[in-house]
Image (tube, rainbow, N blue to C red; front, side):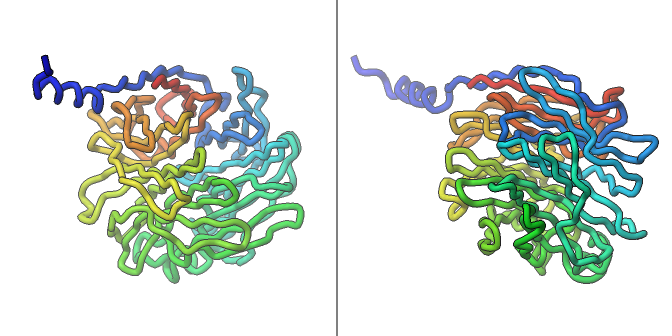
Length: 407
């Protein structure tokens, strides 16, 4: 007896839609940071360890950029990288670090260069092993008292590190929120290489970009991929990428045609990760009409020459502030903030693969709405995702959680 058409259709739909939903298990962890800290980050180093950085209040010497390493199930001793009373400390523009396979480290923070609010420089310090840090240097040599920040760091080879940042040398010292032109020219995107020979390969990647959206970068085989929010003469602020290494870089390429037109910076940058030659991207947009907030992901399997379908990730009221990280077997997590009732927002994650989204979103943390929650960050260590964010309403200000996913 042959099965009926209805039975056949039901079986077909189950094959397509009845795959096992991912199972999430969250474990709240205690950050090694002190109360009142902020601007946290998580980095998986090339040495196989997980690193946690934050800015701690330091009553005698101002702010203190601090880190701890997580290995074999526990956090090691916290170490101060640098301190300063004249730093630019901002909820969106957080310090970070990069770690090479031999334990060599480079970290960055922001230091005021003049009296104007947005006059500050990128400062870099180097360490072999993380206990003693070199006197800081600046990767840009323009000497202008303008905005420099939103840095992405990557370890390269032979003691070299890639540094990419937003550079305001053309802006005349403004910030770009009032007239859209920073009081002068546009914000630019630049990159350079830090190494034994100092700063080399200082290169302009894009002459006009969004003023204060975070950048992100990842290595893909033998090249680097940098993603950022662009800005056109018509104020379209879609997500772009450039690829290259050293002093050879591609022309900017648009990841997706959102056509989001906005006369000001949304302070919402993209995220990128790579695994087995495949790139995964996440970003926030409000579309061509500027009315509906959305978070999307997409993939590229050929190094960014072509992009797959864009999948909408959010649950209808996203704030954005995305991150993305591969777990294993071509699957990973995208994270973002989502507005909920009672003036709260949730940090959520969702599983994805190259074929799209898998299952529903999962809530990692709940916090009050506002900029003070900063930019949640995510890194993968031994197959599990670790996330950190700021919650000024908690005694332990920097929050930390581990999320294990079965799929």
